[in-house]
Image (cartoon, rainbow, N blue to C red; front, side):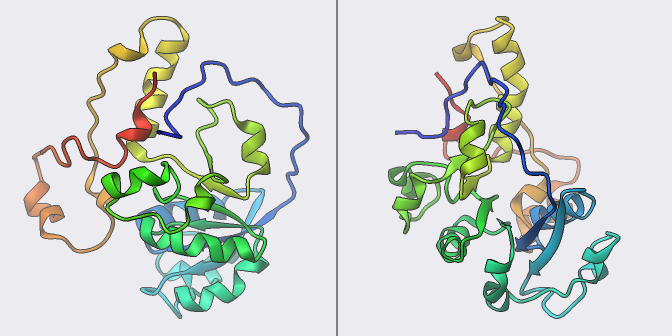
Length: 241
């Protein structure tokens, strides 16, 4: 069963008051591409303050020494992942910018402190039985999958669930690009959902920062190639009836 693929064509506005007081945010895995971009966004956001950043790679160093950001966030010292776990409960929300296997291990620990968790990996996007096929591991916390709320509010009618959720699962990049591109056409009645063909391209940052010969400049410059044909992990969340 695919839990995260259905697109709702009507997303009603909610009348529930929203608390806009500044929230203290922690970023686990700030030295990855997702973590770096998130740090830039949160550092300039009026309703967030970054209170914790972790990275084994940057441990002991100022965040501003690696990311061009201004304000108090630039002076934050990066903790190692192990050190940072002691401070998770002091945050209002913790963002996991980590590989799926790491996220599924860290999320229960963070939730146990009472903090809200937003996972940017694929660790909570699918049903438990799908993980061996699409992510290559057996999910160690299937009970949390039932609690996780998939976050694509422009497409899915679950705004109230998102506001109340303790664990939020962000969609994959290909799923976001595909659904956001096609959804306006579906809503306008210009096409049927079973007629969509998505031709998507990704830059090398999607593969992360780990050194890899296949992702080096000389291998990818002025070229394009298909990868993970029929087995890309974003495929099941990019489908809808």
